[in-house]
Image 1: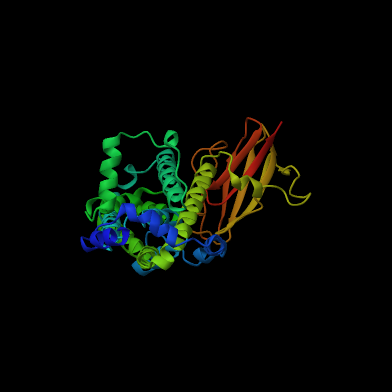
Image 2: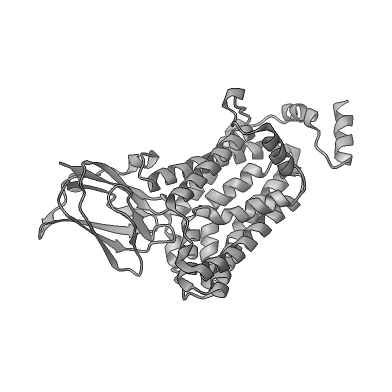
Length: 389
């Protein structure tokens, strides 16, 4: 009866919910295979981010459009894979019945970059997303990704832990996701414009600086097109795997693990950007006696010297005295779209802009003792400054 019911549903282009449990039982998941594939993909992603390839492309408001295309390609295989690719993977099971939702998603993404890019060029520096808004948006997306990721690996949350949204709203959203209606995927794709990717924020900032609607729109359009190859690869590979029952169960589990990893990765980055404790704190510690000493004082100022790379900072740990002025000298050694600025919520306002192979200087006076975090504006790389009495 189950097979007959399944055939009837498929003939109508519909899923058979009651058939799915039995199908899953007939397609057992090889947990070791899932773990090996997941760890390989995660390691590849981390190694690419650490490779420094992003530093090979430097963009400014006068760069040609092909440069922005290459910049988008680099973003697509790094930070955009974590943010946007994570969303695509988390929706892959819901959108597995058709290519159409994926195409609407990318159409909404590309058009929003063109239209909103033109808006940024038109209104200049008036329109800027606050860091708090970007962080809250990322946390909200990460929470949704965690819930969907747990479902994809086969873990269902107890009823008491479900999100407390109105039932009519959750039913409406579920209906939109499951249907072939293009409005929901289109809107979801358009909203990716506001996700705080360091590469995207760089191009958005350059669009504001250009003060030219046409130029700004084209910059962001070409950048968005550059991110498409990697994201389309994620979408269409998910569809191909899901079409084959032999691979679909393993693929969904691997996709679920990756979604959970990207959710944790993005959450950790935003904790860094907000100056809060995170998993990155384990890597911000002195490695030898020289680095653990207090900063030297020259002409009444504590001098910190640091080199900034696309993959991180060297050193990334400092100790200073409270109440004594600090002169922080940061040398650009090939920063990327994410690492071309340094922020620290607890020590100073604004950001330290890096680039051009120059030495950027920031002077401030730490007042309160404590452990303060600094990071790139996306929080992907970070360090610590210990302020002592």
